[in-house]
Amino acid sequence: MKYLTKPSLQQIFIFNNKLVFLFVLTCLILPSANGQQKKITEKFKKETILKMDSLIQKEYIFPDQAKLIAAHLKKSYKENKFKKYDLLDSFAVALTKEIRLINNDKHLRVKPKFVPDNNPNAAKDSYEIYLHHLTDNRKLADGFREVKILDGNIGYLNFKYFIHETNPTIDSYMQLLSKTDAIVIDLRTNGGGSPKTVQYLCSYFFKEPLLLNTLYFRKDNFTEEFRVTEVNGKKRIDVPLFIITGARSFSGAEEFSYNMQTQKRATLVGEVTGGGANPGEILELNPLLEIFIPTGTAINPITKTNWEGIGVIPEYKTTQELAYDKTIELAKKAAEDYRSKIAAESKKLYLELQSTVDQQTKPLHAADLVKMDQQIQTIIKKLIESDWFTEEDITNLSSDYTPTKPFIAESILKSNAELHPKSPIAFLKYGDLLEQNGKKDTATAVLKKAVELATEIKAPYLEGIKNRYEKILK
Image 1 (tube, one colour):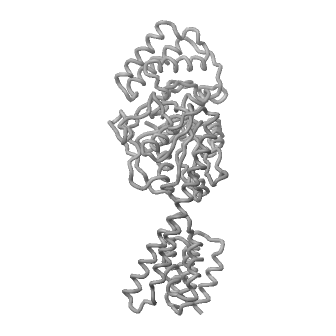
Image 2 (image 1 turned 90 degrees about the vertical axis):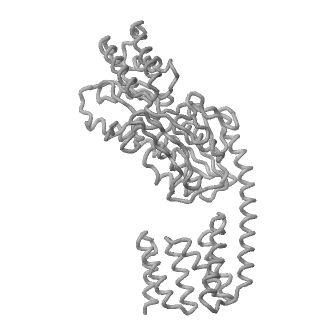
Image 3 (image 1 turned 60 degrees about the vertical axis):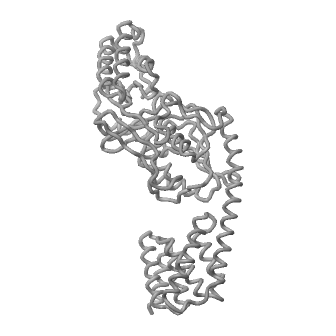
């Protein structure tokens, strides 16, 4: 299989060196490449069908079905079913219809290629092709259409395509939703995309290293597992999650929904999805036509099967028009319950911290200090993980103890810095208190660390931290 250097709208989802064009948006959404009304000859039709016969039998994931599809295609040609189609577009549609009749694999599709100025002899790397692909890709906005926070502190994400190598965009949007009390992901018109991107977004809602899905490919008898991975953001392991599905949700969008449903991690609302679980790649038939052939199939670790031909069936079935309102109704109730749960857990942890602090006297020995630090850090870590205490909240919490028990405040800020190892401000506040408590040498080392971190991230307040560090050196 090959890579294309300047991918088109259907060719943007590149996987690793072994496999390409997985879970690609196909017939459900996209029109033909450039609406060509080009006249074609009988010779062109025959040569195209012979090429399709060869490619399908060689590449299609299910060899037995490939033979049936290829045989049906040749039979249809002999019966003159394509006789009346003398335009490229209509011929491509007719071919697609015929090759789906055997098993209704909706990933199978023939479509016209983009040809600059209808010139089939144009160089494959011509500037016109590059510009066409670049324009299409820019319009995609990394696959996203809308992100916002709704009343009731509900995060809403409208995701159109699972485009390859868009993790930074996902990180940005998930950061915006990091404090919401429920999340809704709208996939009603999502046609799929890269399994790597599906894996990455799924990973925001699970701990590692859970197996999400397996793809099996006919070529080389190759199997690839997709497990929960680390993300460059805050995971939302227990936030209520809702997915809106539609009849146009397809392929990778279905995998995301199916992964979440089978792991009992999300509630699905809407219509039954399109039913396409066989990934593959786009292959050239001739200078004017190309075909998407499924070369693999998905295997879910829970069901040991997939959604091919069936679709993903939501827990709450409704129409596309009513799906949004129903989902928001469910999300609002879930968000209320989530807030109540988090508030109760946070209060319990806060009281636990107070109880621990009340029992502490100033440690006289190093072993006592280590024990106290460990006890406090355990509680501080739980407070941060509760979603209700940020780095700044912990800093403010420490000030409550500064006048009466400065050693407790010092332990809290030490924990804060250790739990936020990339935060210049956490180290700055810890260094300030260390100096205030008469520990200049330790304070100097901590403030130096603050400068290093601020330099690394090019913080806008870098000069201020440098001045603070230079002051303690005098």
